[in-house]
Length: 115
Image 1 (tube, rainbow, N blue to C red):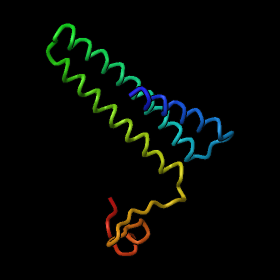
Image 2 (image 1 turned 90 degrees about the vertical axis):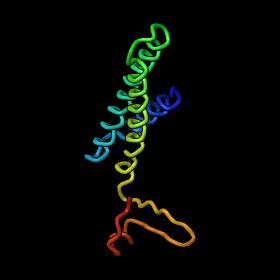
Image 3 (image 1 turned 90 degrees about the horizontal axis):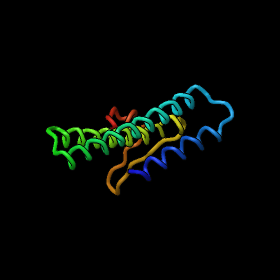
Protein backbone atom coordinates (compact mmCIF):
# COMPACT_ATOMS: atom_id res chain seq x y z
CA UNK A 1 0.00 0.00 0.00
CA UNK A 2 2.72 2.47 0.88
CA UNK A 3 4.76 1.61 -2.21
CA UNK A 4 1.70 2.27 -4.36
CA UNK A 5 1.23 5.69 -2.77
CA UNK A 6 4.93 6.53 -3.17
CA UNK A 7 4.68 5.53 -6.84
CA UNK A 8 1.60 7.73 -7.32
CA UNK A 9 3.28 10.68 -5.63
CA UNK A 10 6.58 10.37 -7.53
CA UNK A 11 4.80 9.77 -10.83
CA UNK A 12 2.54 12.79 -10.35
CA UNK A 13 5.45 15.05 -9.38
CA UNK A 14 7.55 13.85 -12.31
CA UNK A 15 4.58 14.30 -14.65
CA UNK A 16 4.28 17.91 -13.49
CA UNK A 17 8.00 18.67 -13.62
CA UNK A 18 8.43 17.18 -17.10
CA UNK A 19 5.93 19.57 -18.69
CA UNK A 20 6.41 23.33 -18.40
CA UNK A 21 2.99 23.91 -20.03
CA UNK A 22 0.08 21.47 -20.03
CA UNK A 23 -2.17 20.72 -22.96
CA UNK A 24 -5.86 20.33 -22.17
CA UNK A 25 -5.57 16.52 -22.03
CA UNK A 26 -2.40 16.64 -19.90
CA UNK A 27 -4.10 19.02 -17.45
CA UNK A 28 -7.04 16.60 -17.20
CA UNK A 29 -4.67 13.66 -16.63
CA UNK A 30 -2.69 15.55 -13.98
CA UNK A 31 -5.83 16.67 -12.18
CA UNK A 32 -7.11 13.09 -12.01
CA UNK A 33 -3.72 11.74 -10.92
CA UNK A 34 -3.55 14.17 -7.99
CA UNK A 35 -7.20 13.64 -7.03
CA UNK A 36 -6.84 9.86 -7.10
CA UNK A 37 -3.63 10.07 -5.07
CA UNK A 38 -5.38 12.08 -2.35
CA UNK A 39 -8.33 9.67 -2.47
CA UNK A 40 -5.91 6.81 -1.88
CA UNK A 41 -4.31 8.66 1.04
CA UNK A 42 -7.72 9.40 2.60
CA UNK A 43 -8.84 5.80 2.16
CA UNK A 44 -5.59 4.54 3.67
CA UNK A 45 -6.06 6.74 6.72
CA UNK A 46 -9.63 5.44 7.03
CA UNK A 47 -8.40 1.88 6.60
CA UNK A 48 -5.87 2.25 9.42
CA UNK A 49 -8.39 3.98 11.68
CA UNK A 50 -11.09 1.35 11.23
CA UNK A 51 -8.59 -1.48 11.57
CA UNK A 52 -7.48 0.01 14.90
CA UNK A 53 -11.10 0.41 16.05
CA UNK A 54 -11.83 -3.18 15.05
CA UNK A 55 -8.78 -4.69 16.77
CA UNK A 56 -8.75 -2.50 19.87
CA UNK A 57 -12.45 -2.12 20.67
CA UNK A 58 -14.13 -4.78 18.49
CA UNK A 59 -16.67 -2.18 17.39
CA UNK A 60 -19.68 -3.16 15.34
CA UNK A 61 -19.23 -2.43 11.60
CA UNK A 62 -15.59 -1.35 12.03
CA UNK A 63 -14.33 -4.25 9.93
CA UNK A 64 -16.95 -3.51 7.25
CA UNK A 65 -15.73 0.08 7.04
CA UNK A 66 -12.15 -1.20 6.93
CA UNK A 67 -13.08 -3.46 4.00
CA UNK A 68 -14.83 -0.59 2.22
CA UNK A 69 -11.66 1.47 2.49
CA UNK A 70 -9.73 -1.44 0.97
CA UNK A 71 -12.07 -1.52 -2.01
CA UNK A 72 -11.78 2.24 -2.49
CA UNK A 73 -7.99 1.96 -2.48
CA UNK A 74 -8.19 -0.72 -5.19
CA UNK A 75 -10.60 1.40 -7.26
CA UNK A 76 -8.46 4.53 -6.92
CA UNK A 77 -5.38 2.52 -7.90
CA UNK A 78 -7.04 1.11 -11.02
CA UNK A 79 -8.41 4.53 -12.00
CA UNK A 80 -4.97 6.08 -11.49
CA UNK A 81 -3.47 3.65 -13.96
CA UNK A 82 -6.32 4.29 -16.42
CA UNK A 83 -5.05 7.88 -16.79
CA UNK A 84 -2.53 6.25 -19.12
CA UNK A 85 -5.15 6.69 -21.83
CA UNK A 86 -4.75 10.48 -21.57
CA UNK A 87 -0.96 10.30 -21.31
CA UNK A 88 -0.60 8.45 -24.63
CA UNK A 89 -3.62 9.50 -26.72
CA UNK A 90 -2.01 8.70 -30.08
CA UNK A 91 -0.85 5.19 -29.18
CA UNK A 92 -2.74 1.96 -29.55
CA UNK A 93 -2.73 -1.07 -27.27
CA UNK A 94 -2.94 -4.46 -28.96
CA UNK A 95 -4.05 -7.58 -27.13
CA UNK A 96 -3.24 -10.72 -29.08
CA UNK A 97 -2.94 -14.45 -28.87
CA UNK A 98 -1.77 -17.01 -31.43
CA UNK A 99 -5.33 -17.51 -32.74
CA UNK A 100 -7.03 -14.16 -32.30
CA UNK A 101 -6.06 -10.51 -32.12
CA UNK A 102 -8.20 -7.45 -31.39
CA UNK A 103 -7.02 -3.88 -31.69
CA UNK A 104 -9.17 -0.80 -31.50
CA UNK A 105 -8.81 -0.24 -35.27
CA UNK A 106 -9.71 -3.82 -36.28
CA UNK A 107 -12.57 -3.88 -33.80
CA UNK A 108 -14.01 -0.70 -35.31
CA UNK A 109 -13.60 -2.07 -38.84
CA UNK A 110 -15.32 -5.37 -37.96
CA UNK A 111 -17.95 -3.84 -35.63
CA UNK A 112 -16.56 -5.68 -32.61
CA UNK A 113 -16.78 -4.42 -29.07
CA UNK A 114 -13.42 -4.08 -27.32
CA UNK A 115 -13.58 -4.49 -23.55
